[in-house]
Length: 482
Image (tube, rainbow, N blue to C red):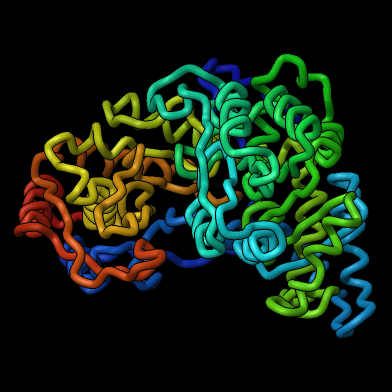
């Protein structure tokens, strides 16, 4: 890792790359931003990108590719079977995780579908540090259930714990004793945990979970989609791993887990996904579902050009100069907001900066979709598109009652190599203004509510005329500024 000190004593995150291709951005006037938000049903997923200034919705498929990735796309072998592109991707996965077998899939949730089809059945219980929306949906669709066994500190929004994504070993032992190892198709760790602020998992916890699972004959699965950031935190926060290089860490994970899967839209900065394993029996149990749901075994529903970019991206994910930038930018964003009094999740994790919407809008009830309301307000105030990570992202209980989320967060994702510090400072400035005017922000209510994945395409409306009041306050304070 590049060790660059600043003479001024005021260090800033330093990009170890230069920008060679750019995309023009447009910042609409505040009135048009309000209208666009209303047209989108107050759901940031339904905004048109032409209306968005800074797109911090997600880092999934939005990371910037390197010049080497773009160049690699030109050598793609588009043979239906026996493709050299597949061989190059398999070699990259083997280099990273030390695994023998590769099953390609078009993205992470496709891998989850294959895992569920192969191993989950009616009555199954899947323990995990914390659920992700698609993971849980695939498991429950097959008649299984999810049990979250995160350490208690993981749900403490303001904390100094360096690894809030760890599994609580006592909870895991108690759960296995209660339901029986035979009813657990696998234990899953998400590295790091998306819905609680991108919080990482320690190598110590990976080792403990692996040893326990093997003693009980239970499969151990790692979701490595957010592994880049987690690697950085293991390397910089875990004393026992500071002298390990990144390949040593990833190959140990490959030995500890029975199965690793990932979305290359995150890990690898391309558009695809994969399942890797050293276990032939598990590989064969999953293999038949690739041609059934995805495509042939050598492309799995992906473009071969994306596979070439993905292979190069995996090698680049083992470069500390690359993986350090996103966590450092997220830390800088978090520090900037805290300095302005805006409540955020601490310590800063991976994926993006997470604003504590409940503390931002204490006058709103969870039934009014606090994080969704804040996401809508942030877009009106700034043109920045974030993602609700709260009750909107949950599904209702079978009896139709609302399942309130453990946290109401607004995630402002920072895709890798995309935003500048000045853009981050702009976003922080508008959030600080919005925090000063937070009493103007009201709640939301559904007008179109899908039963599954409602946060993707459900439509809501403001409760009252609070968006108009917010626009009026913006004009009062910013005049004719955008």
